[in-house]
Amino acid sequence: MAHNRVAVVTGGTRGIGRSICEEFQDQDYTIVATYHGSEEQAQRFRDETSIHTWRFDVGDYDVCQKACAEITGTWGPIDILINNAGITRDATIMKMTAKDWDDVIRVNLTSCFNMCKAVFPSMRQRRFGRIINIGSINGQAGQYGQVNYAAAKEGIHGFTKALALEGAKYGITVNAVAPGYVNTEMVRAVPEEVLDKIIAQIPMGRLGRAQDIARAVVFLCDEDADFTTGSTISINGGHHMY
Ligand code: NDP
Image 1 (cartoon, rainbow, N blue to C red):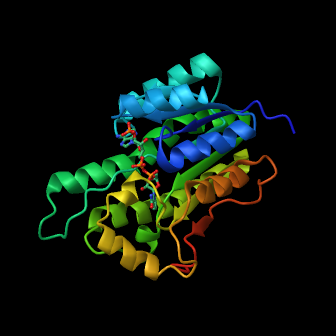
Image 2: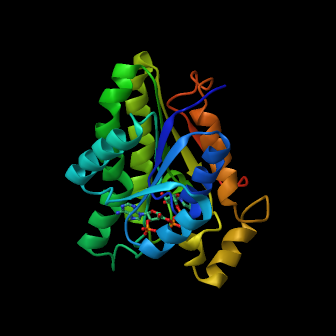
């Protein structure tokens, strides 16, 4: 099937986002990977993949509207949006600062609103859209030291269901993918002894690979996946069954 679709992957220059971009390359989409902090990672990504990139903060509403308008002006209307960018600022509530809370809610959850506001009107007009929001096992199950992250990620799951209801009659599907522990920089930052304990709890006996998540995202974006909406696909090696 001919695609010629424009796909934007936030936080697409490394980790899970990069893997999603690479799977999309096999699907022949025009892909734009966004990033914010790490120019060096983005340069390496461009050199190795030749995929377009755009630098902006997904937590800033006005910046997102402008960036999506510019991407549309350059490559055409955005058909597929993957809200993947995310951060952690872990601490128990005793130690978590208001800034830790705000930053995590802003980058993980408010970003979904910011980006969907930018793309939804055009998807609605063109009666096609695929929106995938990357949630987390820790939103579904909770996690010690992560009240901010768990709240943001579970918020994503509610956001997904509500927006799916609004998109359905316009051919827009909205789904979430909830990864378990995946071997990226985010997880490599977890102390080794903690990680060993986590792996011991995963029935499949290993961390996830970024490709495990990317393959599900590609499936959900297919033109023929138009009856799947408002769902959350959990990919966690059996770690948490929700
Ligand atoms: P990484 O830390 O490897 O990458 C995060 C990406 O998000 C980077 O590209 C980063 O850009 C981008 N980003 C961070 N802040 C902003 C911002 N303000 N504006 C725009 N982009 C930003 O993360 P992972 O690949 O591990 O995770 C991807 C998603 O999957 C996240 O939403 C995460 O919460 C979720 N997830 C991950 C799990 C895991 O085990 N790894 C488990 C469950 C969920 P830059 O490089 O410029 O900093």
